[in-house]
Length: 319
Image (cartoon, rainbow, N blue to C red):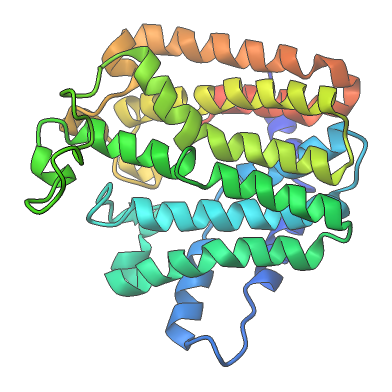
């Protein structure tokens, strides 16, 4: 397990590099309206753990690559993550007014500006990859990886099913009087309240960007398929562990510690790991997933020390 010094050292040298790269990535010309640019910066530069961009750098390091070569992937994945948080927080989605201890984008600005800021961050991520990855083949593969992770079968599809599960008792939220007869979220009835369905949601909604981050780092380090497969298995287990802990924190922590509204999932009867497994069962699930994720990267030896550290951190985090 990690101690206090390990926690401090795990990303201490990575975060300043990531922050500098993010700041440089959202410098716009006067063709971008000032309020839109401000909203983009507010979202992208918000204080946070930077787990996804750090994963890109950790993966590249494990595969023998450099942080500098992998940084375009780190910036791009954080842009997609920032866009997803903006849209997830909207009233039509998760309806949150607090994120990372401060007002969400649609509260700090307005709903239309928030939507447009999210819209702008998506193409900006792919533009960044195309302009900053030097090897054309790596650039194309990096764009493919991130576009797949952010698309209808992964991130967006997972969010749709998460909303559908959340609103199963409120079908009007997922349908429209003029919609086709087969347009409901789950035409055969309510979504199943099972571990399998919950994991299907989170392997796409949370896990997709974890997997993309690790694969981006591997590709930008010119890693082979065996290394990419090992990192993909690590990403699957780590992404699920992260979500299990997220669900536990919603039940056990408070809003000031979390930096967002606590207890909201339980109040809504949302499909979560504690609701299906109980608190002790969810805690055991998180421990099992973290142990499994650590085993997947043992093939990299000492070069994967940050990935092992991160697995332990996910289990111990408090927000």
